[in-house]
Length: 203
Length: 203
DNA sequence: CACCGCGTGACACTCAGTGTCAATGCGCCT
DNA sequence: AGGCGCATTGACACTGAGTGTCACGCGGTG
Image (cartoon, rainbow over all chains, first blue to last red; front, side):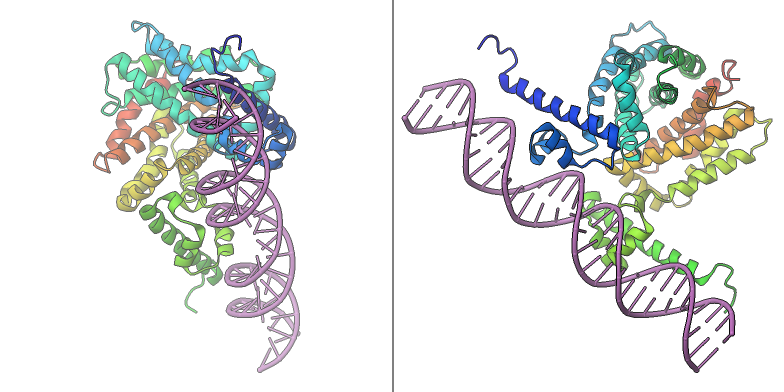
């Protein structure tokens, strides 16, 4: 009753998913990635092992999955930037999205990022997601400039450089335990790469 | 007899390792990553399952392991470049190493790269190795310029950009089935990123 | 009330990866 | 030659990730 704008089934799914993610992150942060089994996670969340794999494709996914939305958000942001903006400025705004998400809930984000960066299996998965981000940004940059990414190297390089900056900033932010300001670091990083993004050779 | 410069035990290890790698690559290329089990690989190589894991830490490793040597080679090359050379030139020479290795045995390399790039699990592992390459190049760049990579963003960004170029070239080379010239593509890519590597903001 | 569809739990199974131990083979020393 | 130590191997057992299958229960519907 009331207003099932989202079917109650949908809310139920969210609930289970969140419960699982929460339990997992809690345990993983304490005992480390290899120190926790799926059985412990599902026991903490109060669901069956089988159900876990109905929500997440793998143990890694429960940590990394939220990244797919951030990838979409980034791409959407880039798509909305005015076309007369320089490539570096547009990409800077796009890359700010995930970094801003960290700043909003730095406590939690720091725990997750630390876990990812120092767990090889998670780091590998994380980088693969980033590759998808790059692909999305690449086609978007190509669209902005009217360049075919299959023919021209520039779109892929531009997207890659932007994410290189993101990565460098994220690592620094994590290593400093959140002490350094991500936004300032990102500006600094983009000051370095901007000459390549907006340079004569680029466009 | 003759000259056991390398202990016979060592040669034996190489033999087993090569046998395993060969069998694995053969099978994986044909049946796909998930279509092959370790048992099939070891049966083809004529060793026990346990032995496989004495040589490779995981199923992924048998495909990706050779990359560690390429990482060392790259870093060594960068270390040997004259210090008065521009950063972009030095990094270009370093990144040429792995690309050159592809060109030497393009037949085989193409098969492996294809397998890696279109198998998510392998791609993830591949990117993680590249992250190690980047770390090595980062400290090396820092050393060249007398910059502390923990303080300055530039070394990490420079190394990251160089590998972004490498990655873009590798993908293009693979997508074109080896038709395009890696060396030419790399020059093209470095023409884009060089302004950032050697630009005023950099050093 | 009977029906239907979906999410769930229970169970069994495959496969990756690890620890342990006994057997084997090779180099070395006496 | 014979014995000793060291390293590699195979066999076996075990844990944990991931998947297929099926029967149950619950909410909505004619």
